[in-house]
Image 1 (cartoon, rainbow, N blue to C red):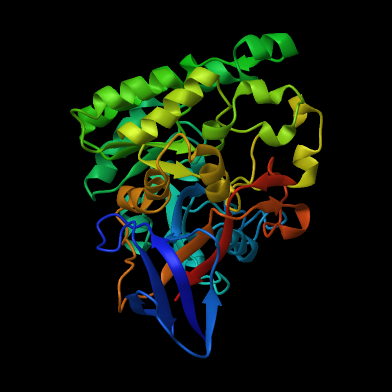
Image 2 (image 1 turned 90 degrees about the vertical axis):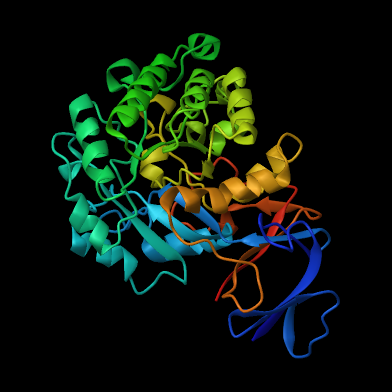
Length: 415
């Protein structure tokens, strides 16, 4: 069926259509025409009150569930959740069972039969078996299609190991994704260390647990001339260090989890376990610095930090609940609703679409005639309530269930 998108503002930096209102006609999965007042018969029409169209979103560090944890998320439900949230590309972490560390593991993800058209880009294990002792087989994994190497949200304790990872991956122009967190300092912490944790009587995670690892990693990347993405930054001090280091290091990048842009530790007074995430939600000052870091280029991408968990892992007392929240379905609508008065809308969209693809050196879809349709269409003139019966993920560990948004995703189009 042909599709006609009416009166939509296109957001795509570098395009002749950027921030202009057009109709878009899609025929057999390709963009046939972009023009004013297109008249076509026998088409499905997408229209709204104040519509925008961008390329499909791309996520870095998605928790996939399958293989090994299909009770939390299968690749089918993962990609259904992705499409519901406007995503057409997912770079998935290797923390599966078996761990993504061989050609076969990578091919399983890329060639899976039930991806709903969503492109999966595997991230291979940085260390063998994710144990943080020996580096993985980077060349083999890269030849099979791995786009980067990481141990997920497991921070590497061994400085020598991370140094070797940067050195050897750099020889094949590989990318290391590392989440900075000193486990010796953060161990046992349930939330940000501050006045709120003290008042609630909960052990906190000090900001130095992240900051000194960020500083270490910046030095290691410069020494090894590597390609490093500091993943899910959460503190103001880290932003300052990254901003300064980027003046000299062109291969240093950073991401931020969307929930750290929208919540602070002050939101945790009700002990909502769906707000117990990693990295922890920090102070208001940290949140403001993260928002500023998106605008000034210190942060290159916004990630969903999608971590599907079963009810048995979350429906517990706060201190016993596993950290993590699903995010694919709510990342875009929450960011646009919550940040549009603080960050320009084109910047938000760039950090969700072009930014992540540039970090991973993967192709960027185009909004142009003759190109395959890879689009997300959303309306900021409408309201939307994300309730439980709309959840596409197999897990419902999301703090936005039953919350209202000032934006609705109308369509995710993939070919």
